Image 1 (cartoon, rainbow, N blue to C red):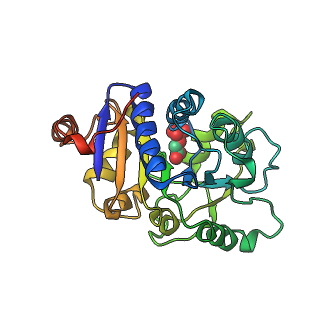
Image 2: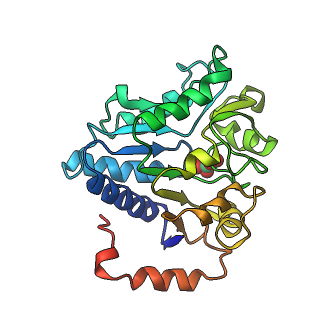
Length: 264
Ligand code: PGA
């Protein structure tokens, strides 16, 4: 696992965008990007959008697969992940909406929606780079603690903590859906590269558990230790409980030329 500790949230976004752009350039125009909702990747998307605007990155033929969606929330709702991805990813990055996929959280066909979503990812050739946030409880996607580390895309029940965390997007906690459909941990692990971004002291415990704790479904993100190409990009506050923080900093500062990122 590569750990990159940045001065602040904007720097996290710049480094994250550099990593995603590097992979996109290597893969070519048809790159498949896994995208996450939530506050953490917004700076990364803004930096990617700057590259698109500047003409140094073209994602017009790229495909995108979102991690998750609420169950039972109409897609027109401004907080459906369909709407959030459209607003924060598809439009700013000039993606072709026909190639942007979000799990279908409508009640009709819900039983098979997960299987169909996994099949669509396979049909697209798999995800080249998956962007991830992390919940304060260590979740990735909406894979809450005790999710199977081999799980596939399926319906899950949100924990009270996740519903409380997401109340900020709704009028009240009662309005936060109880169920979601999320890529499984096994699905996420099939992406060829993972880029996880996090900011703030409220993520420090989850980051420490993910990076330096045991691999356990109690902290679903700890499964990243098993991925051959996982990059974790965090600010100083989120790195606050890492025992080997100085080592990670020295490693990044002394990377050989060929491993360096083109951070803008
Ligand atoms: P956040 O959410 O980026 O809004 O902190 C992350 C998550 O819950 O996965």
